[in-house]
Image (tube, rainbow, N blue to C red; front, side, top):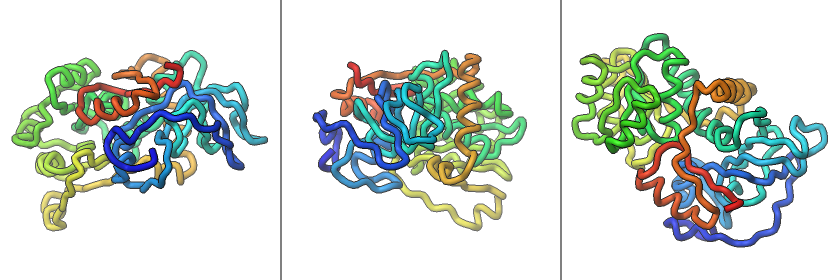
Length: 320
């Protein structure tokens, strides 16, 4: 990218293999993860501002080519890694301490899906939402990358009734197949009532919201006393305001969650990722790969993602 804008600013070019800085590993990329946040980075409207020129892509799976002395990962090892940027490429660099070995028997597709999106789903339950045994949980975008994993993690992590939302009947069927107890239309009009009806007429305990805007407002109104709504995305790009008087009257909580703050705290990544890998290896957690694109088709991947015409995880394969 040499400019910010629509999908057309993503151009396939030849660049030199990146040179790792001190403390970084060089990775031959087998799969790069595509995240909704990448579409915000493309327009420079993401939480973390970007600078140009830019090779986008914050996560990869691949094989370590070079690593600093004393690093926990070494040449020839399969890893997933937080790259920060540079992931949409054949080669990428990443801090060695943000590279995590992929267990034998686990595919690169599954492993990379467990990084940003899997860890987000895990921490929504454990860290941000602090879901207690038996509590009802609403997962917005329940067929998406984060949502499809959050739906599956509900029961294992102690939730009671899991309610998904999605924009089409097909995507709602996907959420049900992944273990949601109910799936409702994500259209904001009437959403409060649909959520309560799906919760057997009761207000809900926890909401994971990736959209913001009207969906946030309608979901907030469906919260029970001591209910929490966790904001983990603002795909609508619409701002919200919450009055302190409303929080007081209803004993409700609004929580923000940004995964990359977990990187700043020792132990918040490796243990959660190990748990996700183990669940995936036992087939308790299924990765829905909604599409694998060539690097040349990254712009089309962004178009499909923004159009909500995909389910699960989207990947780039540099070998295509």
